[in-house]
Each structure stands twice: as structure tokens, then as C-alpha cells.
Image 1: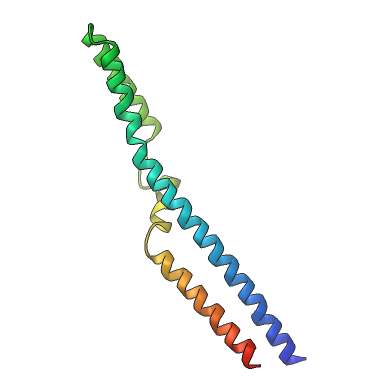
Image 2: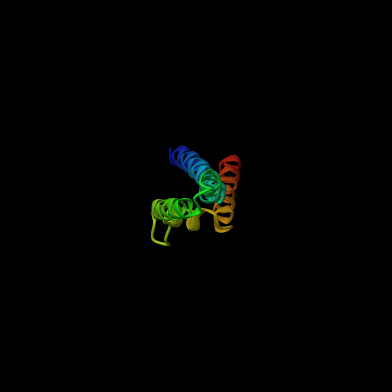
Length: 119
């Protein structure tokens, strides 16, 4: 009974490791998407301001005032400091350390599989 219990324990560990790898890969993928989205969010600043200035080209004072107000509002809405949840998530999962974590999990799976095959 001890051998079968031991084998079952290793099989369960493999399942847990595979789930952890899947979660890590999903989080890394989400972090990459968020990085690209934040890069594209720069268009939120530039394009509407150009449009506002173009629309109010005859009255530049009003166009400038509206552009500054728009820019300030967008900056406040997208304010990302180091303590925000998005930035902490990006800092945690966009590093190469996550690839190392995945590699460690895969090594544990291989070790468990070798152990179960040898039994």
C-alpha cells in the first residue's frame, strides 16, 4: 500500500504543478497584453488633442483650454503609480523570473514522472 500511496502522491503533485504552470503562463500573457495596452493608451493623449486643436483652429485659446482640460482629466484617470494594482501586477509577472518559476515547476514534474516510472 505504501508504494501506491506514494505514487498517487506524486501524481497529485504533478497535477498541482501543471495547474501552477498554467496559472503562471496565463498571468504572464495578461501582463504582456496590459503592457501593450498601456503603450497604446498614449494615443488617448495625442489623437483627441490634435482633433480638438484642429476643430478650434479659428479660436486657439478655447482649443488650448479644452486640450489642457482633456489632458489633465486623462492623466488623472490613467494615473499609474508604483503602488497601484496594475503596476504591481506588471512588475511581478513581466520579469524573466516568471519564466524561471515555470521552468522550476516543469523540472519538478519531470522528477516526479521519473520517480513514478521507476517504481
